[in-house]
Image 1 (cartoon, rainbow, N blue to C red):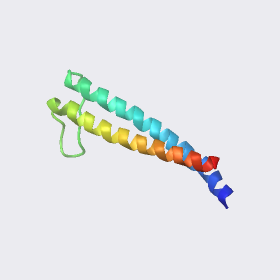
Image 2: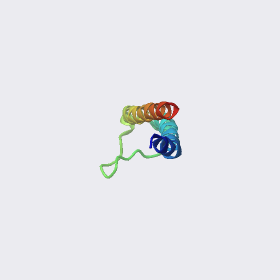
Image 3: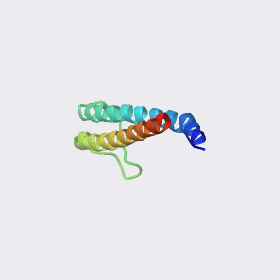
Image 4: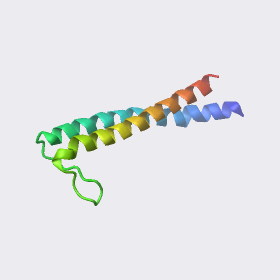
Length: 90
């Protein structure tokens, strides 16, 4: 039964967690760069759902907040991936 669990982790958890962690890390970097770019005049909007647009002066703090959140989730996915790899190796 343990071999079945290891096989399922290899087939589903490892690819999903690896792509998710790398993708979230890249999105955290893009979010931070976008906040800096918007502050210095690049013309795009930062909307928070239906509540309205983020003021230009708050672009960097909001981007840092979202980048930190994305980075935290990416690190948690990476740790979960490493735990699943250790389970498969054992």
